Image (cartoon, rainbow, N blue to C red; front, side):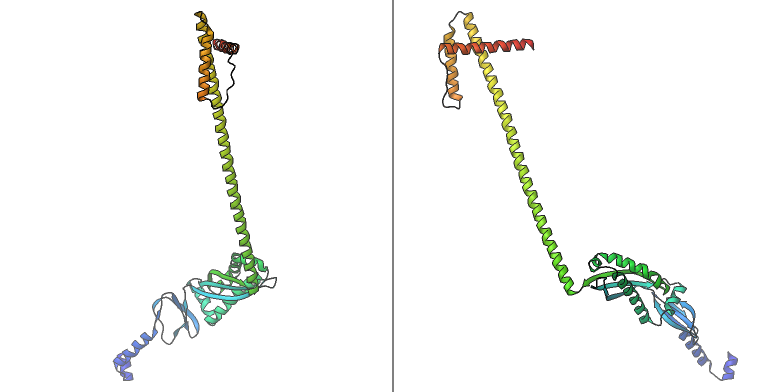
Length: 318
């Protein structure tokens, strides 16, 4: 270096300054989330990564900086169905560089002249695929085919944009509309369907209410009838038991009087009047017909004694 300085008569500090300027001019910074493509006289040389990089001054240059982050694009376009109905789409596209490998970056850097050309090709490819799919469907089918449209587009363009060095992450169809006249007609159909559904629901609710009420009334009547039947059965059993006990008492009294050689007519008359008294006190009727003659009382006593004899015989058999 001293020889060079002597020959050129250049001060050393100037030479050092020139060298420093050359080095600093070759230092390039790449931001995080980006890579840069370096060329030498227009020919691809290498890819530099985020951070501080040193290029050969005046030889190596940065041809293009490429973002590796996700990017989104909103699309609005029109398609026509097979029955000539206009369909308007609003969609959102999410994509990014396929990866930061050298081959993928080279595709992204050199496939299109600039960013505008890339976006035009990407948008036209997606819109073209959606239009081609919708053109085979009827207007009434389109609203229910949102997922099918997305799947079709992804299947068709995945390979295409991978050749460009990009990857499609997501395609969303945010809105599907039709001409104003069609939208009014659809609104009327929906309103009619809602009214019909409301009427059907109201009718079903009324039917259920009436059915439940009828079931409740039927159960109440059934329970009341069962209770009345059981009460009548118990009343009958009580009356039968009462009659049985009265017959036994009268028979025993008559038997004891006969054994004592007493006139049974007086006892029969006393028991008869006592029975009439009880009928008058506890009976619910207004008129009571009785045979009060001695023959009538004698007949009743014989029936009671005969009933007691039958009861005694049945008990002995048991």
